[in-house]
Length: 88
View 1: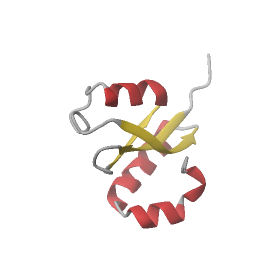
View 2: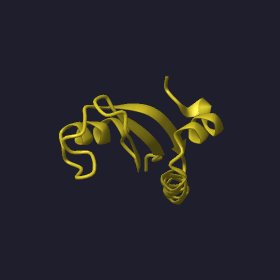
View 3: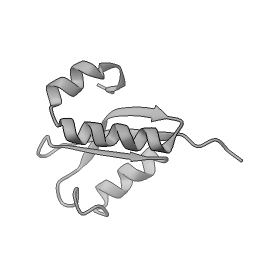
View 4: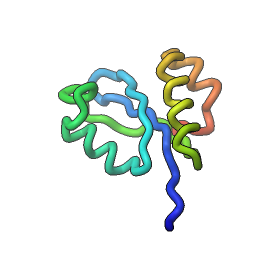
């Protein structure tokens, strides 16, 4: 059985600069879904690009970290605390 990694990601709207936090086992497919308008929270607010990706071996850990980011909602703090996971 193949080993599945889980990814917590932040995407940023290229039109509004807003961030969206999520987690998935297939980041590229998930980004495509966001850009196709298949997620109500991000539909008609893109295009979107990845700015952050962090991998986890356990789905539960990824889910906890995603919730932590969503509760934090402070862009400057998240950038300073998790700088190594930002893609830019």
